[in-house]
Amino acid sequence: MLQVTDVSLRFGDRKLFEDVNIKFTPGNCYGLIGANGAGKSTFLKILSGEIEAQTGHVSLGKDERLAVLKQDHFGYEDQRVLDVVMMGHSKLWEIMNEKNEIYMKPDFSDEDGIRAAELEGEYGEMGGWTAEADAESLLHGLGIKSDLVDKNMSELENNQKVKVLLAQSLFGDPDVLLLDEPTNGLDIEAIQWLEEFLINFDNTVIVVSHDRRFLNNVCTHIADLDFGKIELYVGNYDFWYQSSQLAQQMAQDQNKKKEEKIKELKDFVARFSANASKSKQATSRKKTLEKIELDDIKPSSRKYPFVKFTPEREIGNDLLYIKGLSHSIDGVKVLDDVNLTLDPYDKAVLIGSSEIARTTFLRILAGEITPDEGEVRWGVTTSQSYMPKDNSAYFEGVNTNLVDWLRQYAPPEEQTETFLRGFLGRMLFSGEEAKKKADVLSGGEKVRAMLSKMMLSKANVVLLDEPTNHLDLESITAVNDGLKDFKGSIIFTSHDFEFISTITNKVIDLQDKGAIVKESSYEEYLKDKGLIKS
Image 1 (cartoon, rainbow, N blue to C red):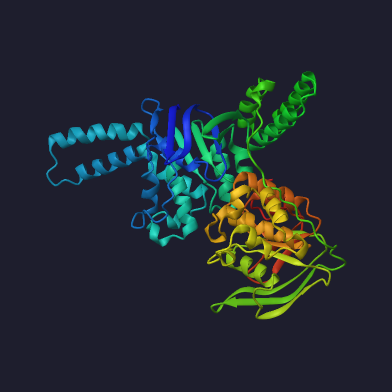
Image 2: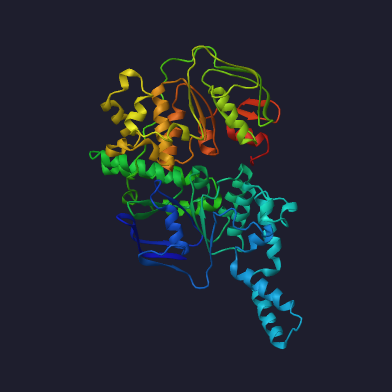
């Protein structure tokens, strides 16, 4: 068990945590959520001992071991992949090395023999005899093939290094596992494997993630970090979100009879209890959910940006026609003979193994670059608005405040200070926030500013390259809802499974040559390709 007692931390005048008291118990997976900058990663560092709290303490059960997902992907360049995984159990790794050093001594003494026997006993108790096989099994589960396990880390690609560090944190059955954005850089198969691993993990997991589907599948509890406090809620992310919204509605409706509120709550809890998709979590959640009383559910203080795309005109009969599209970058062909037709009001996700190909395709559609070959023809009544993955060109060296920055993209009738401030306020730039200089905005603020620009364009086609990058869960939810309700067409890329699944009616799969276009849900497409289980 991991226990946090009276923990407080300040950075200057800024309070991150104050008198936090919480117990994390075995058999549960806790999703730590909070707005960008709330201190989620800092709290994990306090739990791991990397940062010391100013007051209070963190205690771990006697003889228990805590493991952390490391973020330094270049920290083990000269180490063998298999060794890096086993280093996750530092005590076992130390015993292995000491034992080997003793056996390599040319003048092996009686004392050495006694010490070696002690180490052999500890080694066996810790599972040392199966350590290499266990480490290799973790690597295989995450998609690292056998021919890579004996290579040095420097020989691996970045996405493979991410998987090795994840395997390192999982190795040796730690009593407490701290995972900060564990799905970043993982393919869909690896994410699915990790979900199954955590679902069957008997100890304590605390995870920070912006992947709502992942949180929904693995979490038994949500730990909500807000205003320097952490509140624990039973259930996954969707249960926390929908119950907090329900509580907010109830709080606003003071005239509703308590009996009606209780019935609404019971119906809501029953639906979630019945719909839990994973048996282990379902059993754990159901028992606790059924005990929830009205007062246990509290409204959230979270603020959600208002994202609504309103096209100025309908699309008409034609959306997009592409024939023979090819393009090379630095002599390498990234798009080769792409042919496709999209229909009005299609919402298409762009997938494929090459990130460069996806971004290049969107840039061509947006008119930022001209293809080497082929034809791209938009319907005559379409208008496009584009959000690039790298938006720095819109902000670097721009010394105007956010109101003036947005004014240049607004139609004449919407360029007044009052309108723009109101518009920015709904995107969570209220008061003095709207007067921030454009070139000092954070990554999440820049994305919200770009979304504001796109909404003002009133285009009937939006092109989005990884729009959820840098956003917190609240903003991701708002963008997701805004795009679901959009009465136009969308072509976008994303790694967020739920974001894609709730928006898409068509999949564009860019191949080494050409593209596959299929009218299908994202999940069904992946099942048909054998990338996820049925």
